[in-house]
Length: 290
Ligand SMILES: Nc1ncnc2c1ncn2[C@@H]1O[C@H](COP(=O)(O)OP(=O)(O)OP(=O)(O)O)[C@@H](O)[C@H]1O
Image 1 (cartoon, rainbow, N blue to C red):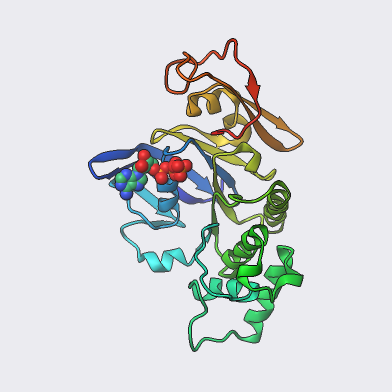
Image 2: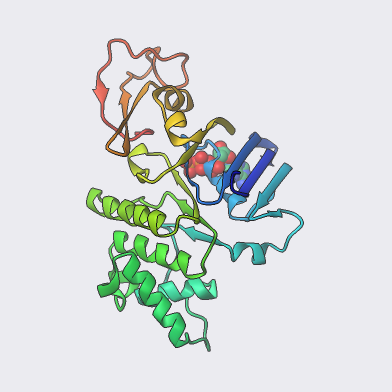
């Protein structure tokens, strides 16, 4: 028997300012699955992530998160079961890595006045920092931490509240290649340590998919192009269709990469100008939306 859905979108339509942004999206995510949410700029990924995080209501259709229907449940309560890793996390002060993790318990950006952690909470924060490889950096102040360290601290912060669903919104943005690989290793280690945790990672770049990704949904122009097991979805055909550009997808040694065929401006193979053949052009190794 398959696990209970952690997330279920049924015929979700979303309109803003007279514009239809999502046109009837269906998606089912079950416990322990690790999804990638892929698609070009403006496809609707952030909008869908807003439903997953119980931040947005659909215009029509239904969204069930952690067994609760949006519109019938207190959102603050529901959000406690959802961890969110956002590289634009707006820390303004010089709080330490350990304090950043503790804000995952308080659900705040800074530590609240008149709140101090108990010994168990401190021990948990330190254990989480060790899990993400930041044991030696727990007293480091946020402004002195590298982007990679911040990203890993934010994973520890999100895990502090013991979420059932973890959302990762372009978490490797701004990381150099070594820091990105360390970050992906942290996600792979997390997947092995917490097999029941469900994750949804948004990215434009196939190189940013952790090896432990199990499923993918590809969005384009507000509709689902394909959704299901990652091997069936992240293919040359699906990715080329979604990005309206000929893109060769390679899966080797557990990781994915994309090679986009270059098109001259105004050529018949340029994006959005009809079916792409790529004849007579050269290959450039770039991110999917390069
Ligand atoms: N509040 C809003 N009002 C009007 N249009 C919006 C609003 N929010 C999003 N949109 C539009 O909806 C479309 C989908 O936006 P969304 O941010 O979900 O895409 P995305 O796939 O996350 O894009 P990106 O990869 O560039 O972040 C875009 O065309 C965007 O301009």
